Image (cartoon, rainbow, N blue to C red):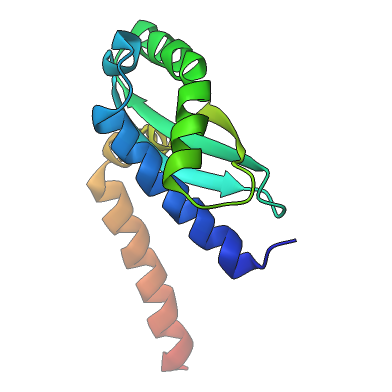
Length: 140
């Protein structure tokens, strides 16, 4: 078992190398359909498996096509990692679509929508009532 520090260093190294491959190494046209970026890499404690989380910007069709391209390029990515990174065994590579940015954007949109739905007068009126009660408590 590798130490936590080593696992995180290997994960960062894999993230950097795969990002470089996405820029100019993978020749599959499907990968270029959506804008792809590596958001995170999760390496197992024994350094045998690497989950590569990718964020893809584009339509749902472009995302599906890009994921298919990445899945077919898994062997190439693994062999390139073996050549670029000095490890006893090159980890198995799995690409996973990271939708956390979309979920975060959706939550922010909903919060902004809730904020705009509430009239500002209602908010200031509630604060005025609370402050009067607060002043009354200390007046006694």
